[in-house]
Amino acid sequence: NAGVTQTPKFQVLKTGQSMTLQCAQDMNHEYMSWYRQDPGMGLRLIHYSVGAGITDQGEVPNGYNVSRSTTEDFPLRLLSAAPSQTSVYFCASSYSVDRPNYGYTFGSGTRLTVV
Amino acid sequence: DQQVKQNSPSLSVQEGRISILNCDYTNSMFDYFLWYKKYPAEGPTFLISISSIKDKNEDGRFTVFLNKSAKHLSLHIVPSQPGDSAVYFCAARAYNQGGKLIFGQGTELSVKP
Image 1 (cartoon, chains in turn brown, yellow):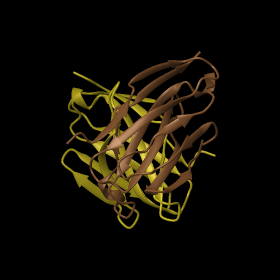
Image 2 (cartoon, chains in turn brown, blue; image 1 turned 180 degrees about the vertical axis):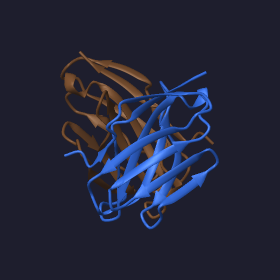
Image 3 (spheres, one colour; image 1 turned 135 degrees about the horizontal axis):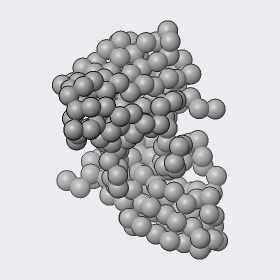
Image 4 (cartoon, chains in turn green, brown; image 1 turned 90 degrees about the vertical axis):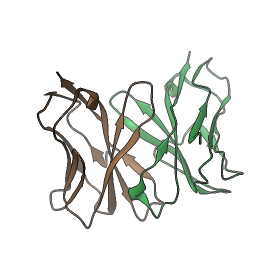
């Protein structure tokens, strides 16, 4: 049981380049989300999804796109990378939004540097 | 507007003593509060949660207290162990916001032998 798998673990991009951060979970979780962690800012929600075909914006959505075509996968796309997007990105999933007391399972993160 | 705040960036405690991590919030619509622990180069891991209808929840060495009137919660770790050294995040969920979690800035706990 792999849990939440994020790829790649590290990435360096040049300003203006595009890329997709991959997130997959094998727990049949309904809810998936993307966070970014920056020093002194904690974890900030970028986008989230309550099920296949349904996505919504979080606190800091600008510059990022998401889609949820399957229950298992929730990729995060950077269309034109900017230095302000240098951060550590975490994907998280949860069985159901109706059971928050079970917590959310996080992946191990993707460290992205935009130069 | 920071809805969940952890005002102490760091905390240092002696092994065996109590660690108290604090968290304040502003949104009265939050119905669940969670604590996460994060080691370097790893993702956060769920530690303990509390519903807004309770004022205390205990799990082994970890206890979370909720004071709704003060919009304040705290995590107590007794006794503290060196392996507890990590960054602790407080998080809250608003039932009318699609289940998303809002996190605080985190507090780095250092437990010294």
